[in-house]
Length: 80
Image (cartoon, rainbow, N blue to C red; front, side, top):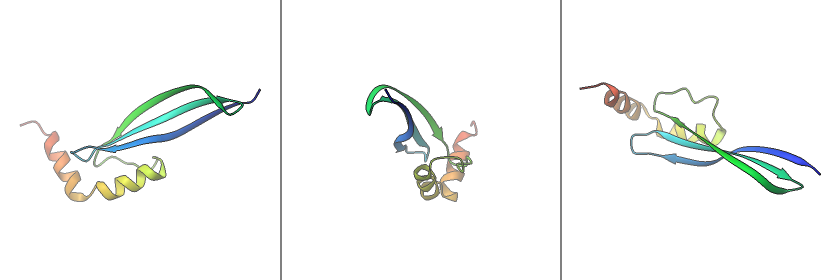
């Protein structure tokens, strides 16, 4: 019996305000058959440091998080 734990980003979504929603899946496999899994979600908002993210997430953040998107997001966070 061989157990294997695999952790990977399985879903990346860009929402209207420029935030990037990231879902990470942790799967446990026994002899190649998945016997358990769980998900974790987190959000990378415009202006966040994303250097520790998965390479695919970094690439999307670099493309989406332009100076204009960051400024618009930050301006929306200030209460009126």
